Image (cartoon, helix red, strand yellow):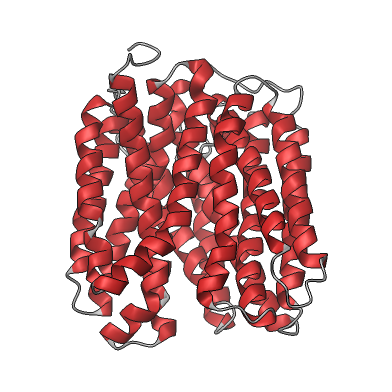
Length: 450
């Protein structure tokens, strides 16, 4: 096939990917806001309602690499479209859920569909746009994710003000339908016809499911969490031994052997761990230490994704022209400075200084993330784009989960009043590490056009 699509088909293909990404991100943001309402409606405890989020996240992380492999085997477009269809149908099941177990099952299926979208979205963009515009396309994707994250809580609150919680999932139907319609323009990237290794997929699922659930249980009931971590380690060792000799393994060891790709993955994990720790800590800092309401806290937190949405197009433009290693280094440094300022700034009950601080954080994160993702995809051969997408999504979710675990442990091990600021400081260290690791990539081969 040609290196890129021609307009207007290219524009419609980009719209298909961005609509699907918005579908996945909006759903997660809206569901988070609705947890208290759902808990009351289904007559479950707030702690039990958190599993609505955990089930979705676990399904996402355990299915990313398998979905990337399935897309490589049977075709990117076919697997991507199937993911949107599964996600949309599962949204109907969520809306019709009469009980928590039913809702959890539907959320798991949603996560499986979302994993297909996340693993293959940018891979499809790589075949839809010219090589020199990939950074810009990744920037558009980042804008969509950031805007959806920022708008999700407000949309969820607006829907709940006029309807009941099932409407939060029913709203996915028109968006999913529009995405499916636009998918007719996606490039037809043929699969290689390789049969997926069911045993390896099972080991991958067991590894990441055990990690996510173990992380969720760690603070409350540590012994089962430790057992799950042991299970995850055992399954991962077997998976690595099984996949390492393969030419196109489920865990992309072939890509990780390339220094540019490996460094990008490590930097991504560090950055997302620091970002997640920072965002969670800011939320607790505003509400518990500064006495702000949930609504006001949401207002202050919105400046971060808004800054990402503003920065991402600029970052995409720069990433197509400048060294992504140094752009990532600068982005990581700026994000680190922002988190350190949030940790050290004596606010004295006035949260307004957090506005420029969160804007600075969003600018740094947007610059880092777009540049790092561009390098990660262009460090992989074109026929391994889905594997790069699966690894990129896995690195992000592993980093976010790590950041959440760090904050949870800090609340257990440190005084309540000190935990948010300590978490912000740790976030600053992690994001600085992400920038420093990225600088190691300078001078190495960053792009592959194979």
